[in-house]
Length: 303
Image (cartoon, rainbow, N blue to C red; front, side):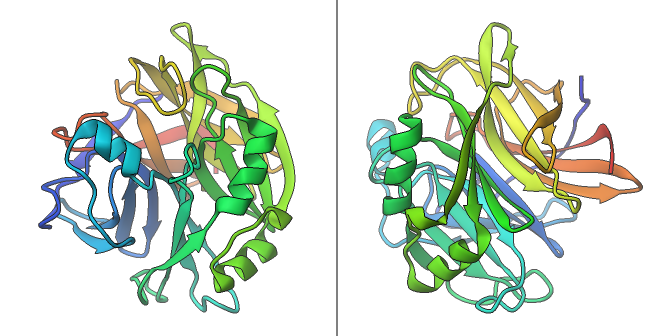
């Protein structure tokens, strides 16, 4: 079992909310931590050190309903946040926030350019993922994208297979085509290279399913997985356990172990320090009154 340490809770100095509750994606860039929540229209930004409150950056216009059912139906459901490297369009890289695609209203992405020091360089741009997600749904049926990470010349998406009919899968997109699509604001099916299904096993009798991803320098990808007894890809359910694993560069799972914290892990940022893989983790309590925690851990795998 992987021991975790709680570093802080994700409090906000923002009028929108006192804290992040449904943390679903995490990226560290420079001295900053960026977090997307699946029930918000904003990106949350925190200092990487200390516990000072974070602030928010609006990604999409409008307001979400306050009622739980109404908010769930209307939210953009941003579930994955990844860092793109320098390119022709983004001199110092960018952040890409991707939606789950689990309903037709959950198919808007957002891209935010970065400065060299990891701060945000400009206003976010909306990217329509509808045509890409329609194609992926034909192959996976129960589409539920929850993780994304750059691995070489691929953008690797992780599909979460929770609920009846769900399948865990790796979707590899051509990175050059993805970058080109961000310039025009539409991400299409021509970027798809491969779709492969995986099974991660179970925790306490419930299937473990992908919930996020973060790259390592050698092409491996660290991922989180959660066992949630939900009836389908949209409904919440009782938590049965969470785990952290590693995919080899070819996408094969080579390591997986449970964490000691009884939380639904939904976001991970991985880096190599001192020859080991260290991770930061965020979780979603499925309760807007409960602040999301930021956890840290070291994996017993070489960096």
